[in-house]
Amino acid sequence: AATAAGDHVVALLHGDASTDVAVFSTDDLAAGPVARAPLPEALPEAAFDGPFAANLAPSLDELKSAETLARLYARKAAEWNEVDGGFSGLGIKQFLFPKGVSGG
Image 1: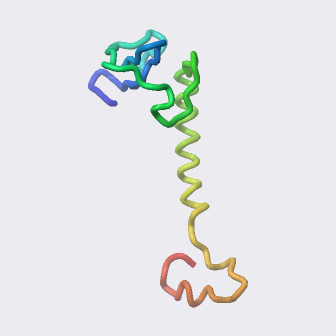
Image 2: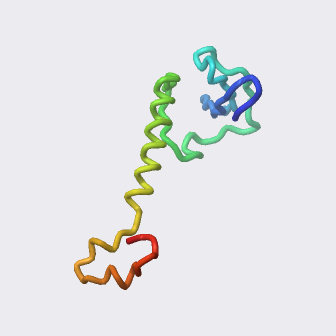
Image 3: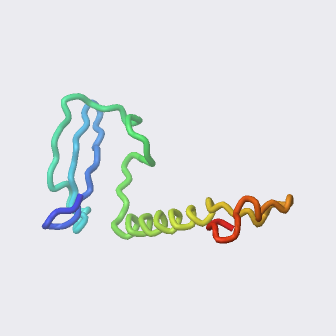
């Protein structure tokens, strides 16, 4: 979430019998949360999908690297999923993509 003071990361912190919502400033993740609030009931750790690992706090450089990789994969996915009738062994490219129509 972006604010006038900078960017923030919102995370769930799971304890033995509790779950807290914590907000971290991306300017200094190692400083710990700038705000923390307990939820009324503990959530199971598997309640949300994602790559979670106990006692793991990625560094800011690791987060930036992961973001860069995610952007590269998203760009490549668009290329990989592009339809190209040129690979057809049936010779039907001209029927699938008539001249002047994008995709061929």
